[in-house]
Length: 102
Image 1 (tube, helix red, strand yellow):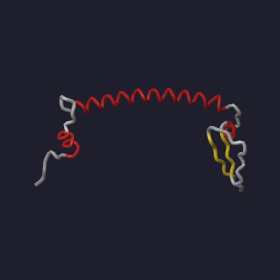
Image 2 (cartoon, rainbow, N blue to C red):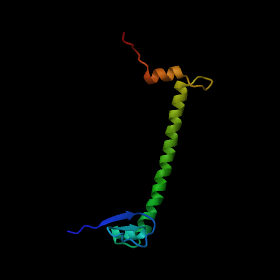
Image 3 (cartoon, rainbow, N blue to C red):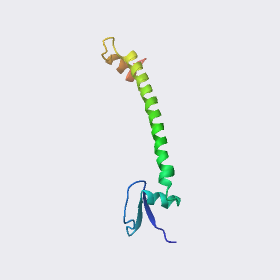
Image 4 (cartoon, one colour):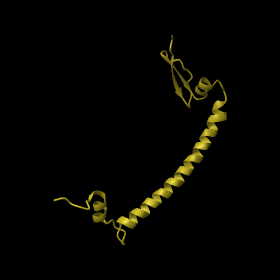
């Protein structure tokens, strides 16, 4: 059995794919190699990028909301009324013990 290694790159161009010990296919040549469809990069890959952006936008929204929530909880629990961090409370929460053993 003869095995030929292929280095696939989702984007770009390489005008000399034969590297001697392996082949390197980039961009449309790569997508054609794995699918047999010369237009798959436009038919599928481009819409995937659009859908990925939609998911990313939703993630950023949810992430921002959670960051706001955690920030509000931190301020409520570990900040003084003047906005300074109450280090004693924070250190006690993080590494203090309710019951010290003698």
